[in-house]
Amino acid sequence: MGYTFHFEDVFAYGDLLLRGTWLTMQLTAISTVLGLIVGIAGALGRNSTIAPVRWISGAYVEMIRNTPFIVQLFFLYFGLAQIGVKMTAEQAALLAMVVNLGAYATEIVRAGIDATSKGQWEAGMSLAMTRMQVFRHVVLLPALEKIYPALTSQFIIVMLGSSVVSQISAEELTFAGNFIQSRNFRSFEVYFVITGIYLVLSLGFRQIFRLIGQRAFRKA
Image 1 (cartoon, one colour):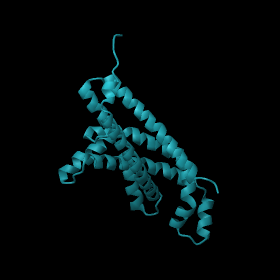
Image 2: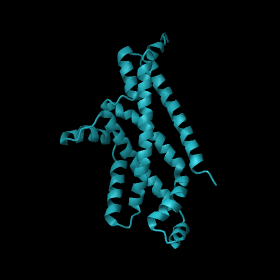
Image 3: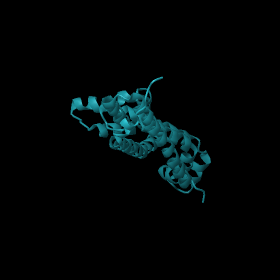
């Protein structure tokens, strides 16, 4: 083949790779927490007895799930700037990831709530608990346990999808790879290393989420 590999030309930019990896991890961790909160709120909205709340929640889910993530990102970063709402690339990236994850998490959490038996709701209501109290203390944890594998898969998808935010110059891992490749023209080596880092991040986050699940849903 005649090609000589020079991975040292990639690792010469080790500090840039570390910064990019760290930002990717930060975006993933924060968007996971906030996206899950949005998802729970959205699921409540979708099951609300108040029609306008159901409509707004449904419209949000359909709009986000049926448009490309990169378009959502560009709208938040470039579109909102046109009407005076300006954000840094990192802020726009985080907001886009939270909004996107929130829509998917809404449907996943709603599936878990819908799978909860009516008996649990009735048992809680018989104790003079409000509907919200029943949801918080009786329904939510079992519902999350049912759909936790699907949620964790969505969290990983969002982490991998964070590579798109390099398009607005958020200096995460893919941005670092593109920058390094533009300097040393070692495309194979650069993207081989980037691929390896994403693989390690995916496996690492899966393990973390597994441990969190074991602790959160540990039987008494």
